[in-house]
Length: 207
Ligand SMILES: Nc1ncnc2c1ncn2[C@@H]1O[C@H](COP(=O)(O)OP(=O)(O)O)[C@@H](O)[C@H]1O
Ligand SMILES: Nc1ccn([C@H]2C[C@H](O)[C@@H](COP(=O)(O)OP(=O)(O)O)O2)c(=O)n1
Ligand SMILES: [Mg+2]
Image (cartoon, rainbow, N blue to C red):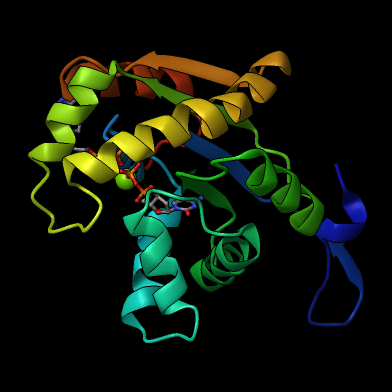
């Protein structure tokens, strides 16, 4: 582990190792990442951080990067990691937790390498929700969350970016034995049964 980057000072000013547990939650647009993360949070002691949600909140907040982020999302492009990582780091700190589901990040090699360099964090494992494009397209077109990128033109661009830029990241972690591939083309309940088996009883919330 990148111990230098992960080292923090405690209240007395001495260096302590902080080793947050990070699970990257990946899969194409509409594969069910957000839905399954909500289920995981209900059952396990994790904090859910969606990179897309953080970027959309940044647009709404009127930040100076807002227009740039909005344009990139509309075009299905990946926002520079510097912006997204800052938002993730802030949200991690504010959560007070040390277990995170990082949903929709890293989405390209630049995201992946920068996160590792800046935070020194390696994911414990990577959930990969594997779903055919036709099914993802159907889901996105009926998501009804008023998202500016859930139209067929942007969806096609996002699928292309997923294949060209995001799949290589999944392959990178697969080569390290970290990918837990899940058939996401089933009901929410069936998918979650598989997900539960991966997290195991260890971090389950008490009733
Ligand atoms: N297993 C599933 N079967 C059918 N619809 C699903 C399933 N999982 C999620 N959905 C729906 O599909 C849409 C996209 O799901 P979401 O969780 O937002 O995916 P992602 O975060 O990967 O884009 C939502 O409207 C959601 O309710
Ligand atoms: N790491 C990320 C994650 C999302 N984004 C941008 C670009 C993505 O198309 C949009 C939407 O991402 P989001 O994860 O919310 O989308 P889906 O849940 O996969 O449908 O946000 C990004 O630029 N960088
Ligand atoms: Mg999502």
